[in-house]
Length: 327
Image (cartoon, rainbow, N blue to C red; front, side, top):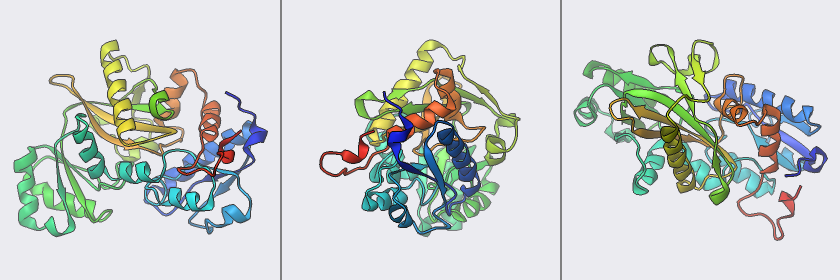
């Protein structure tokens, strides 16, 4: 695989944006920018919340590394804009980005494909009255998880231990998303598994086991403390690791993802069965992030990972001949 940085042309690292994950995106983007520049790539920071995205064409950027997280970053919107501009970009295309960003739609597809994911209740805006909310634990049991289906980084998430917490949990989630996802709580170990590539050639990287204080793998612990322990290699039995990788690859392909992604899962303690929670199509690339950690265990440095991802930049509908993707 050729990685001649001079062939990439002028590269925009998209970071920041408007979402609730802006701060994390800026950290991811800064890391990617430094890595690409260290490899001789003509890379520049570009914040779509500060500049019109049409300037990418005016300034003759030849491809984009998407380091945006959350809405307008990994939900298909910026991908659609780049399709219209004809500028190849990293990660999944419009449809896969949009579907994977919506955890309810993701779960529907996974269930249709026979893939394991926790039971759930979807509360549309007109289904969040007190009486309906009160009945959710009857369907899912306790504890349960309440979360906004189109946010990431554990923003707006509550672990509900009793009926009395339901109303506040739904109100918190609804601050971030009109819809609310209530999900069966899987007692056990949390793991994550990245994927690189597209279609039949996609490969799963080593599994990362996440050990958080009191099980609180929340926004603060994810990005701003060193209290969480990560194990990679995971230390899981080889058969368990292989099964997780198999499920993750199937989930990635079912959503039509490409380039890279990272699936989060829980391993149920009672029977060691893995359950898919979500697919991240623009994973974090910060100092605490898990894709670089897993890649490192597979012998891929952070800088090399960034260059490989940039090389995979493409469009859903490349011009005839695909000239934009040649490097």
